[in-house]
Length: 136
Image 1 (tube, rainbow, N blue to C red):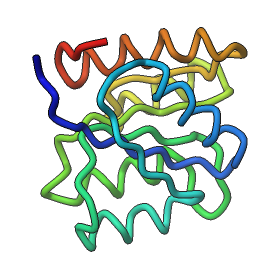
Image 2 (tube, rainbow, N blue to C red; image 1 turned 45 degrees about the vertical axis):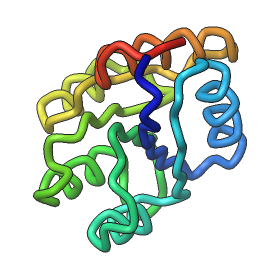
Image 3 (tube, rainbow, N blue to C red; image 1 turned 45 degrees about the horizontal axis):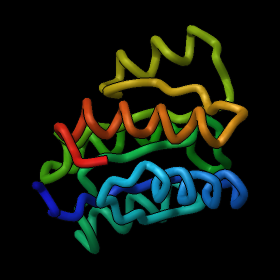
């Protein structure tokens, strides 16, 4: 059984969304440690400083100062994490944003669900796909 702790980063300006995400990650039963930033600039600075190395990154699409797509592009320029799976995580289901995210190197685009149970299910699937089979 794999007990290695995986690191997850969520960049989202909404405090409630960050709290719900943390609850959902805990409920997946996976061994995931979460880091959070409320804006893309702080996240990029922390990543460049190598404060931690996430195994998977979730970026909110609509944030002040820098959008999730802009943040995605900047993270892809940071060599030591350029291959890290990055998922755009947004309330928008607009297919144009979905296409733009994938064209710029996102691994996936997830529309934020309305129910915690749906988020838990989505995260389990995403973690298994992006990080390999994990015990649940």
